[in-house]
Length: 112
Image (tube, rainbow, N blue to C red; front, side):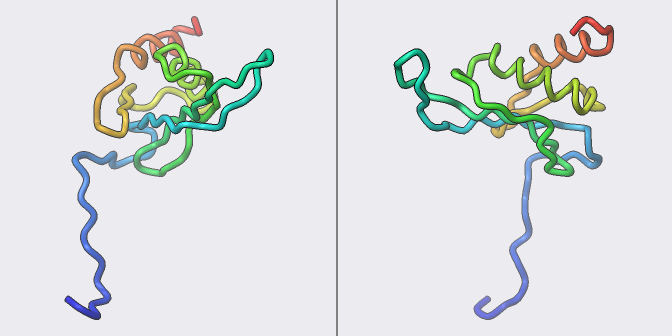
């Protein structure tokens, strides 16, 4: 409708009802930085809480591998604790369970 003040309803495949239930992972291409005389591409790896949109942790990395994401996840767990569902999803909805389970178990057992 033209001139209507109503906004379209936002639709999501899944949402968390409470903060700390689901974290989403996202990777953004960052700037190139000089390291040992060579320009290297960086990536901003972030974990974001679905319900509150709080950034659990974010860091620039030199890659976007599972090890890079695991490092960011470890810091998020140390700073924010284990999410209720111990699960994270990337922005397409894919679960990142293998890394999450390993890190959550380590955090619960005090190994990490």
